Length: 476
Image (cartoon, rainbow, N blue to C red; front, side, top):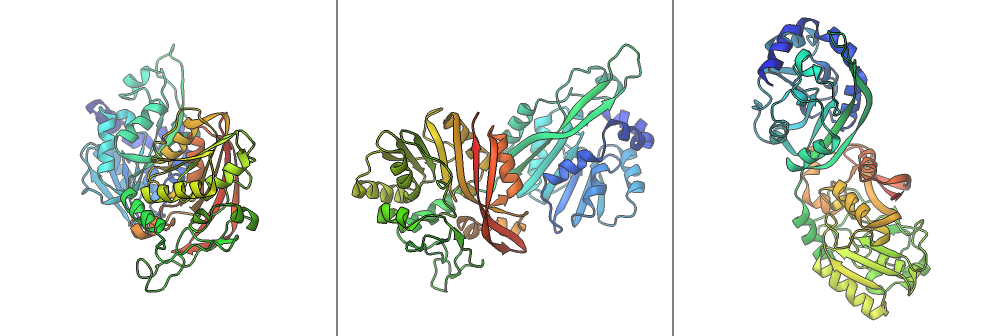
């Protein structure tokens, strides 16, 4: 915090709670907490805590709250306001030098703090430093505005921020799954001097996650799957059109990792026996999806379809039959072993309108506006930055193009130790996001007209429901 800001808050600490109520209300912190996906065992920090506006709401929800502020006077008021809570620890410190070890916190919040910092990117980097992999940063602050008098009267350093700039800072700091959205609230302030316009500034909420590196593990596991080895006990069942397993299957001690720690998940895939019979056997026998993204895609002859994470090629081949000779299907996969298998299946099946390209979901090897439809089946949950995958899908779609994805989601956040479990990530379980966050990322990519269909069956991990969804959306 800058010296003018410190002086300002030292002067107003005693009346800040009354002033704050005139500026913004509890809806701001409700929006922030909703984006954090908190669990009771978590430790969270409130940077620029002031008199405890955010900390007050956090304390009942998490194990420990660290209230940090550069103003001793504001912190003293916070101590009085929050005296009933025994799980709050107070730190008189600058936000640019947080008093916490690297990777020690599950969540970090900063409400109306960033516009008082001299270097917002440096402040964000410092908050990211103390986050665990998989930990969340949530910032609520002012949208860009032109009320310059706030610099003089309230010691603001920045006149808010554009949401694009905030997103860029988050990504530069190494965060993924970035969501920058409105809170539905405005910050209101009246100038002391006449002749100045009253400030009424919308408030944004920005959330993101510290990266959990998993690409190498996923590639190794799916390379093994291409050669017929089960994903930790999950052997696909090609003879069944209804049961399938993208995650664990309750294998025995001879499984690829000595039997899965997760319960068996069986989901309705939605393929008919005729569809499976029409696909090359090499593709059908290695179908690792959790649904049928083509079921409601409405593919038409002549369309171009791109399949993210095409694997053995089942969905690509079914799409190829639907779009016909005038159409084209592009399968994209990062695993050479899967690509080899899919290309062999295409040759054996005589498919001339399908090609398989090596590449990553986060950087699709396709031109802008190349596809009419983008599909994916239980793959995006494997990516570290799912938001970037959806932005890539948006880029390669033509205007009016459709997104059809089947994927795994959860009803809420999973425990930290499970998020860090590599085997569970490859099994499509511990990399799955809460459904609300998953849909937010699709909308953030620019898609509209979202429709969601949930599977009738589900499993559970640590008391959290895990299930598959088919999501349809459109690029305007």
